[in-house]
Length: 299
Ligand code: NAD
Image (cartoon, rainbow, N blue to C red; front, side, top):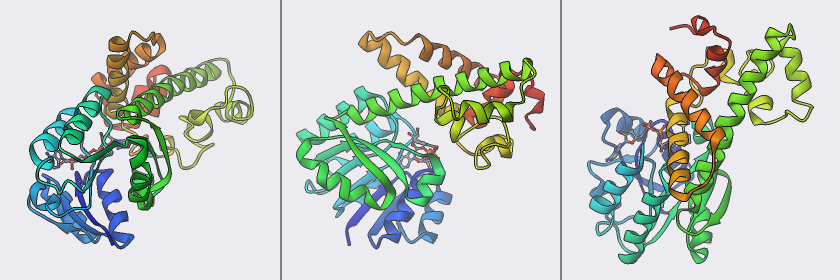
């Protein structure tokens, strides 16, 4: 049994903390939301009243927070110095590479082992304990990191040193944003040409257009029953979240000098979709914008 402090019990963190408790660990859980704390309590964690209380005798600290500023504030003001220096610190939020490296530096200077360990998989995988983790950490710490993440994971891959986990996450999601846009455009064109989008799925999923957005997340209802397209694009991966990740990718591209014109285009399209009021819809609902059929999205 390991003493785990879990900070951030939202859509993702709630299921992740529950899986740590299910694995027999003692999970001291904290969130600013009373409702999230109550859910964590019902899932076998011990709700506590502050970050300091959660981390005071922790062996592992896991954070799952919205964005970079939250992560920097919670680590610099509430975790570093309050947790025992023997604790392993794991940030699973999706944030910018620069902030991840800054937090890693603060942790290292104070004597902690730290890893950025963002996830791929969404809320269903968070609940099922089947997330993919991409990790940036010192090589010597990876064994400990992998063991600590095990109850929440399907696979854990070390991307490289600090910040590399976030770099992998940002690049992966930029590729996903672009491939989803391409999939939606192809379906919209197929429909205009009189080709049944379900028949197009049969062909594209077995041809060179095959990709995750086609085979596992088809934006047209029917061919992939588990895809959000079958439930009016509710749940899944919100457009606002995809937009956040595409912005992180564009910021990183600007700072590093990388050329990412398709990523820029995807960001502009998702920003438009968000501005039109669809930030809460699954990102595959972009299909309805490209078809000129936003009215088909129930409000
Ligand atoms: P969420 O908004 O549901 O949860 C974040 C939680 O953090 C909230 O409950 C909030 O109250 C809490 N919080 C904020 N500031 C806090 C503080 N100072 N102290 C304690 N708690 C605090 O978000 P989410 O969907 O769980 O996403 C979390 C992270 O995971 C984000 O970085 C997101 O990009 C990433 N992510 C999300 C998904 C997804 O499908 N939702 C998939 C992969 C990665």
